[in-house]
Image 1 (cartoon, rainbow, N blue to C red):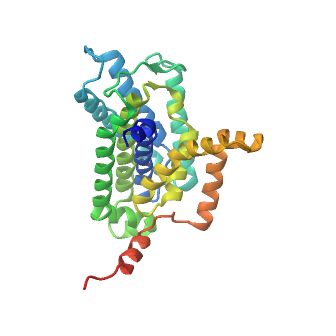
Image 2: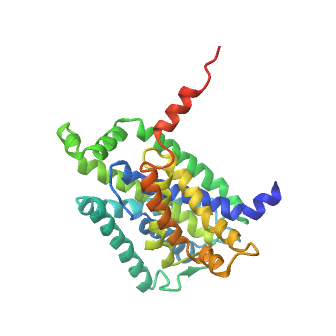
Image 3: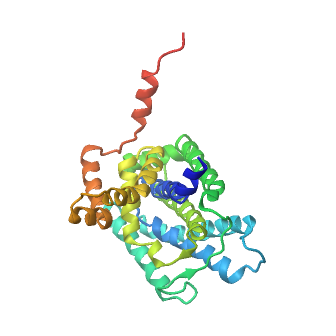
Length: 311
């Protein structure tokens, strides 16, 4: 068992981080907003942690103290949330594909800034970010509780007044407005909560990866997160968690299949480098055959009905 965790520790932690990024994209979708801004907030949180740990903190020792990591997570989340409010208030007046285009533009603007600012290391990025742990698997002590806390908060959010308001806006914004629900307030709230979560995940990821650059927040990343949410499910938080874990591991699975002897060279090359094409195909097929994703609230209702009753 120890050998398994040592071998696949990096992949396991990456899957949990992918699940939380899926949740950050799911939060605006609760209000029916197709936002692809999560990679931008993710990159921002990572830069906050990388800059603080390499240029601001002064400490002695081989490992970054855990309190400093938690402070970086807090600051990364707060700064991302503040930017989420500033971006969300004008951007969320748009709907559908127009909002998606606007948030993609936001991600690209942040990427261009990070490529040209000296404090972010330009195109090279920031290297040698201090590590709070000796091995990748030890990050589970931070990432797993963070994921569980996020899931608990999402579960509670779906079952309180705010969650019901978001659902009403998603189903029919005009009817929700007529019932006294303020669509702008709740849409900005959901967008900001997603930005905070993405910023916190970025702060952890910067230390986990030990390096941070403009490639962390790109349009490619938006497609991966969107795939995880759409295929996993857009009606309950369990879907993005499952989808985020699966689609984070999928590139490694494809590389493993590509290394099987006997495969044609063109097919092996496609499996190694064509993952975005595969993700695009999965989005098309998933929206056709599973418009609400693989995991839906009805799935849980059917499972409870089919469970045998106690005598």
